[in-house]
Amino acid sequence: MAFPNLPATLSAALAERDYAEATPVQAAVLEPEAAGRDLVVSAQTGSGKTVAFGLAMAAELLDRQGKVRASETPLALVVAPTRELALQVSRELAWLYRGAGGRVATCVGGMNPGKERAALRAGASIVVGTPGRLRDHLERGALDLSALVVAVLDEADEMLDMGFREELEEILDATPDGRRTLLFSATMPRPIEALARRYQHDALRIATIDSQRGHGDIAYQAVTVSPPEIENAVVNLLRFHEAETAMLFCATRDNVRHLHATLQERGFAVVALSGEHSQQERNQALQALRDRRARVCVATDVAARGIDLPTLSLVIHVEIPRDAETLQHRSGRTGRAGKKGTAVLVVPFPRRRRVEEMLRRARIEADWTDAPDRDAILAKDRQRLLDTLMQPVETDEGDLDLARQLLAQRSAEDIAAMLVRTHRSRMPEPEELTVHTPDSLRAAQQERHRPGFEDIIWFRMDIGRRQNADPRWILPLICRRGHITRNEIGAIRIAPNETYFQIPRQLADRFAEAVERTAQAEAEGERVNIEHSPEAPRDVARERRKGNGPRVHAKPHRKGGAPLPGGKGGFKGKPGGKPGKPAPRGR
Image (cartoon, rainbow, N blue to C red; front, side, top):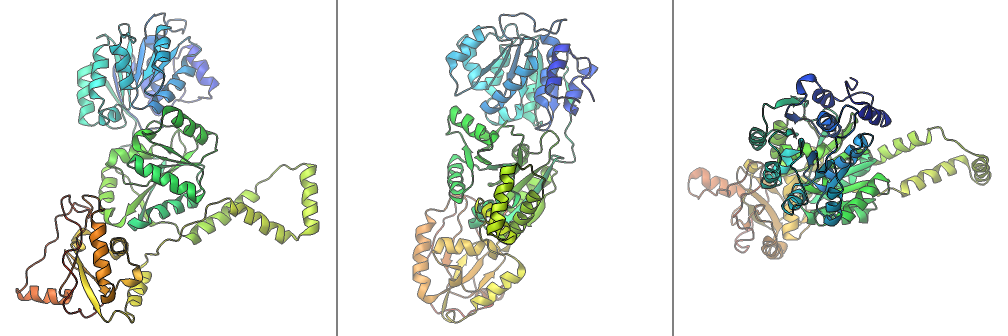
């Protein structure tokens, strides 16, 4: 659909940027029924909503000649949750209104407030900013909203999630009653409904998000991994997809810093974005991504909010999002403006149920799979290299002369092999991941029934099948807590509420001491008790059936397998008593 009934100044700006047709949200705000009304717009990220509200407020800003009406104070105000989004919106509105004589001032944290006040005094017709900085200018008298005719809240749900309700209310209370209010939000939770009722009148609701799908242009994958292998899985995912630009999401600044260092060590061109970075550092990181000097960005949720990178085709949720809305906001960095993208959730085995529930609430169907292994990555590399070399290229006489010299000294096969080796040397090496197929698990079980496990000590963990206990993540947990290798763990027996495993008697004391030390380092809420079991699991089960032994109950766990806070982690008691008879490991 073309853009209907626009002033010539805006039509020329759109044509200059090759905007031939309106997106659904842009067409909806230009419908006759939307003219002059307050709007509540639910539109997915990357749908062209910045241009949409830029066009929607044109009737209030422009005169009959398509020029911005004269005013000493701002006529339009756009509030965005983050610096990056505000700067992006400011750039979009600047080119859209340049021909109409519009002047845009940007007011965001981390920038020079003196320069912002000077821009406001110079007569900015459109002001774009973040809630905290706008309130600061308002309270200092630098921002005069008395002549405002339109206010826009962009990604309003995120601003409320970030705790900006008080700032938004103070800003909107300072605007005239007759102003038009446009509220754009990817989701419509109750706080957004309350905000709309308080500050809007007879608002028209526009929804352009498909209610049956989280995002039509994004392919979702869920990759199950053992918790200690998350970073290796991330490396292999980056290598497998070889995206032009990829964004990796972590929950905290510390985790961003650690993963950034890890990927740098592996040879990736990577930048980081988190709250600890200054605005100048953020700008430099984003510019590196746009210039292709970096291809991977590791970021926290807030730092990555509103970032628009046209080449971003891969999003990896290194840490599971806190809810379905965060999942969609993160994933919405890709699959924008009609382009296809991929979003991958890295799911530790014990968190699978939680992720399945999150996907269900978000109405997203994900392809569950294992992380790509080395063979799969090398196969992809070979195909990509063949595709690249088969592309037509332009050569000059100098190139042909060099090719002839090479052919005179080496065979064509040698030259091709050198080309492949040179191409591969520029790529980080894939990581070796533990194979988790049923055959490999059975082989591992058989391997543990070998000499050296005749004299063993049984230990017990307070998690079982009801808490999603699985050898694939129990084994790395035991190794990490007890400072032993997989080959030093014998049979594992998983019961409904507990798990038993064998340690050779000669290693039991050392294992117990390591468990006691590492228990203190376990995160609160993620602790699992490990203690000596005086009896083998078969003897315990036999006594329970007779009613002679006390029932051992696991501590309460969260849905999805994570223990509730408050449980003590660590070794209880010392190994002793008679060694239990080795039993076949089972589920």
